[in-house]
Length: 248
Image 1 (cartoon, rainbow, N blue to C red):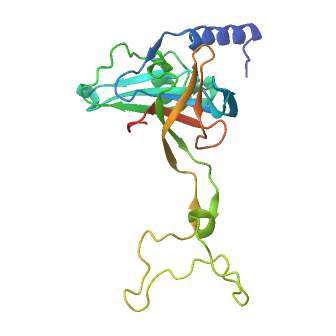
Image 2: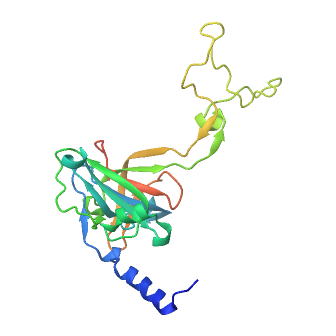
Image 3: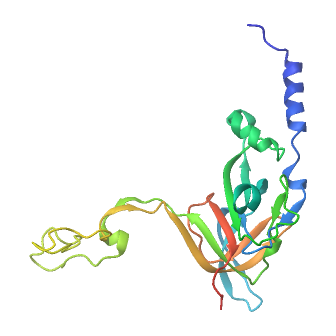
C-alpha cells in the first residue's frame, strides 16, 4: 500500500488544527436567565482564610471551557435549552456523527454533553453556538446548587448504606451483629414491602447539594471556590446552578 509522505501528513494535521479556534480565546457569554448554569471539574479541596482570619474549607472547581454546541428553541424543539460540551476530544476518538454535530461549533467533539433547561419565557439573548459560557452569573457570597455523580461504593450492607444500628453486641448474640433484624410480618401480608431499606448498590447516583456558598470566583484562572465538600471523586463533572431555595 502506498503511504503518504510525512510532509503531506503534517500539512493535513496542521490544516485540521488550524480550523479549530482556541477555546480560551473565544467570546464568552453568561447564562443569566433563570437559574443560569455552568459545568466544572472537581479539582480537590483546600482552605482559605477570611478577613477575620477564620479558616474556611473549600472545594476547588476548575471551570473548563463550556462550549455551546446547540441552542434548542420552543418553536423547533418544544422547549428551551442550551446544550454545552466540556473536555474536548481528539478527532480520531470521535465518531463521524458526533463530528458532524460538533462541526457547527468548530470543535472536534467532547467527552461530556449536557443540556441546561430554561423556562418557556426565558430570553436567551446573546447565546449562540460556538461561544463559551462564563461564570459571571454568580459572584462571591451567592448560594448555588451543586449536582454531581457520587462515588460508587459497590454492594453494601444495611449498616453502612443506611446507618442502621445492627444487632446486640452482648453475650449470646452470635452472627447477628450486623444484621437488619425483622424485615416484615408473618402470614399477613406474607411479603416484604417495596422500598424496604436493605443491602444493595450504594453510591454512583445523581446527588444535589443545595445552598452551597460561593467563597471566591477567579475569572482570570477560571476557578471557583465553594464552601464545604462536593459530591463525586476528583476529576468528576459538577453542574453549578443558582439555588432553588432562599438561602439564609
